[in-house]
Each structure stands twice: as C-alpha cells, then as structure tokens.
Length: 91
Image (cartoon, rainbow, N blue to C red; front, side):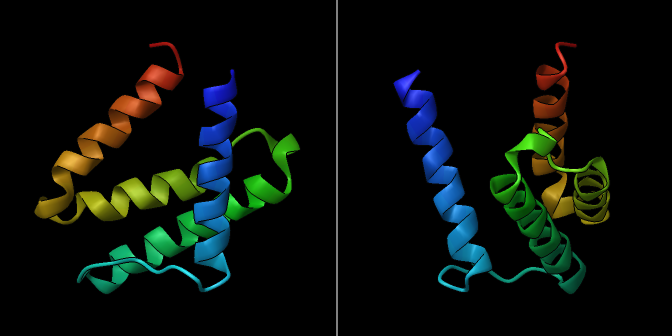
C-alpha cells in the first residue's frame, strides 16, 4: 500500500510539474502528437484535482491513442497503451 501511495504522489508531481510549466515533453514529436500528449496531461491534472471522477475521461485516451496510431514510430507505444487498458479492465 505504501508503494502505491508513493507512485501516486510521483505521478501527481509529474502532472503538476508539466501543467505548471516546470517540465516539458522531451524529444522531437509531430505537432498532432505533441497536442494529444499535452491534452492527456491536462486531463491527468483534472484527475489529480478531482479524484472523485475516478479516471481520465475516455475521449482523451482515445484521442491520444488514435493520434499516436497515425505514426508508425509510435505503434509499439500504442500496443503498450492498449495492453494497459485491457489489463485495467480485467480482460
């Protein structure tokens, strides 16, 4: 349980640092990928600020995955994200 709390705090810190401009997306990414990642982080901030919503709204996840899928270099990441979604649903 303690490890889960540390992980939660770590991710909350990452999200807050990104949204506050203390961290940024590294590397050279296509503009649409950059925008989808940015939107996803801001959706993560909604979850940090309002944990009662329970999860990031699905449209942000769908947009991130569909945008990444348009670029072959991100296909391994897309497969990983889909795997995470499937595992999280107990499938």
